[in-house]
Length: 92
Image (cartoon, rainbow, N blue to C red; front, top):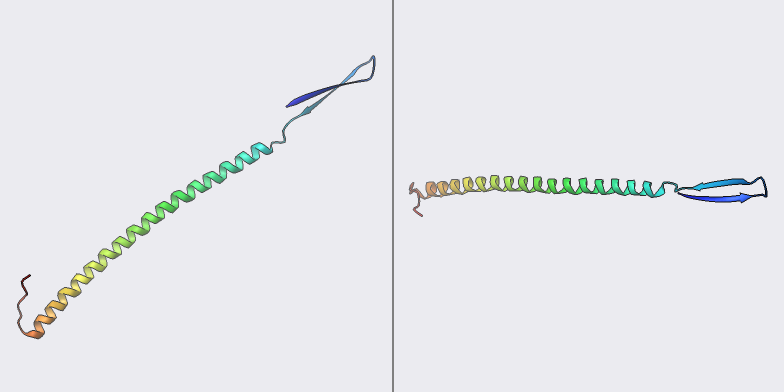
């Protein structure tokens, strides 16, 4: 804040003091930037968390498909053995 002193008139002097201060715009901009950075941080944090959840879900689904494929393969082996009439399991 700056003060400007102006003397007006002669003998009975009158002193006028004008005070000039900031309008607070700089503080307002700083607060807005701080809020924007906070929102961006929260967004990035939750985005990373969502990616981890998706990856885990895909891994679980892949394990389920693997188990189902093993069962289908075993059933196909048994069906093939039943059709051929051997009734024996193949030695691997």
